[in-house]
Length: 357
Ligand code: NAD
Image 1 (cartoon, rainbow, N blue to C red):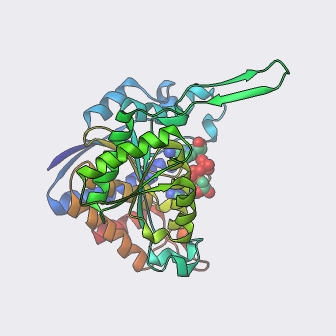
Image 2 (cartoon, protein in one colour):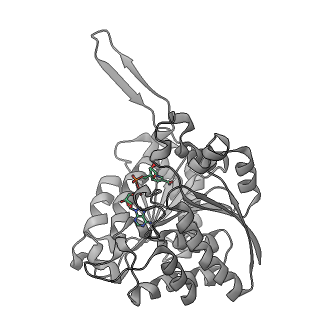
Image 3 (cartoon, rainbow, N blue to C red):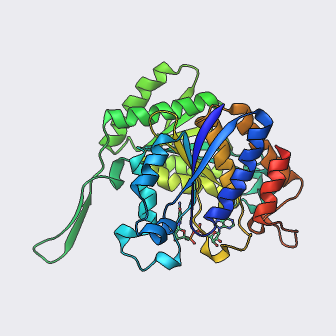
């Protein structure tokens, strides 16, 4: 198969971790007889340094023409003094919106080798944690009208409006059900239907969709109860689908399960198969250029790209088991090493994974 991939290496550790993922993709290419046409483009601080803007039309056009986009991270102290609308992070929001990416997928998986780094008690995670959080990304309260007014008595009142249409709920709901179909066929839809109208509409759309997916074991859960269950019995969850703000909070809660921010991949999807894949962490300027970053979150993001955008299930699974094998053999970057344990650099970790594919 031939596929085109745009690399947005970005800033800080971005180039190191993306190059690590490319090392692994080259091995997949050779082993499975695919051709990946890989083209780098600029985003964030690197783009500001080159042409004064965090995101150019050239980058947007290249991403729109590609089958998938693999991103490192953007930002850093060098660009902190720039005005908010021209900061590196604007490039990130700009590319997500230009590609119409309304669904964010964040898996949370606990490798047993990293169980010590998980803050949840061992007896509560003995059965393992392997869940997928599907978060609506372009609607809800973060995108609603907002204002702050000063009342006659001089005190202020602030308003943020939460709004969802049936269409917005339906398209994210379908992604939730489709993810469940690809996994253990269990879906929990999280809302606050005992209080919010948006949640009652959310629930009714989800119920309608559930009739189209009879193979999926579906249930609703209130967000407060879901937050509690995520730490008391995280192993019960397969796929969770929820609106923007609930997803923002719950996905960070769930991600703690993996032990280190350097282990967590993500995918952002819109209509069609094209997606943007990136680790959830930032550009880590404190360790940039030292070959000390953990490339596994980016490598696992590349595995999601193989599975979701390219339909290469076997290849994606091979990358994921290569990561598992590197951990089982005891390879650790600094962020996931136990005290006294030997550490490898970013490049070597990527090579170990590539060799294991
Ligand atoms: P960060 O995620 O970059 O770093 C937080 C801590 O985690 C640091 O100690 C860092 O060294 C460590 N860390 C992060 N990724 C790691 C990895 N792969 N391997 C080993 N250690 C890792 O968050 P921050 O320090 O708050 O932000 C730094 C810059 O990144 C800021 O400019 C911020 O705006 C930007 N940022 C970008 C994104 C993105 O591009 N998606 C996301 C978050 C933050």
